[in-house]
Image 1 (cartoon, one colour):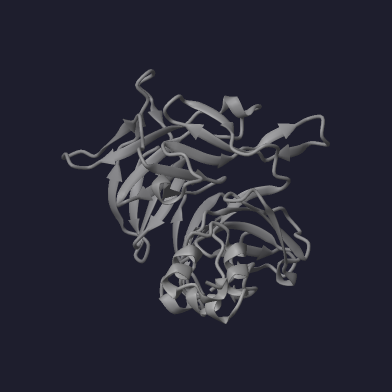
Image 2: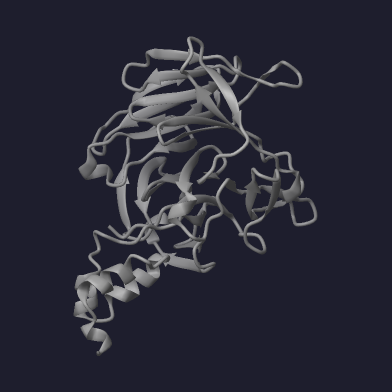
Length: 343
């Protein structure tokens, strides 16, 4: 049988096994039959890429593929001079410091969606849906201004943000189905806030350190399979990869008073962290991942390298409580995650 005459269902199964999006694009370009067997609306599931997010980006944006170990360079004029501030699903939040414009960018499709302005130079995404224009979901972004943390929500085309303010600031925080979860900086309690009204729906007592009996902060809050996880373990003070330590806790709210319980294992789950937010995937769905692990991008300051940071991609194993390099070498100026999409 000629390769161009392979059954469509078999070709479709093959296309769903391609772990890198660039291979999926090449697969579709082979011939009309292969193109029809791999609809663009049904790509294979992708592991996140690591993306360069430094200030004043050039026209070319660089990504590292966790699946293949390849570095992809995308010519993207719209990103020139902007800061890429992290992603959620298929889009990255971008800020143009000269024009003071905030927008959503998909570096692969080169689409850009303008967002309402803010009074800040520091922003981070909390939630960007897979299709911000068509889905009708809110875009949720946080920013600092005058010492106050503001969380804003809007839909593409809106002229203003709907805002709530957290005067004390935050450690870990996340957004999930209309609710904003925040570990407050001063009290270390975790509040659940209605993103529309700003009403505090519930207050969760702080995590208590078993050794000292003192409240302990949660640096990341992650919703996984409907369960709220709290991760403690900052990265900024570590000098080596091996210095990194993390603990994962889950919220137990079955009793009258909710409490945090330490998890010795997260099982099939894999957590991904950048500098402010995290997300969760299942190791069983990606053969490249190791279960019961946390993937993170370390920030290692090198005093002998012109004061620059190195960004090794690392993996923390919750079974043996050890951190190691997930890939050899450091990723220059790469410090956040991006889910590749060509839709």
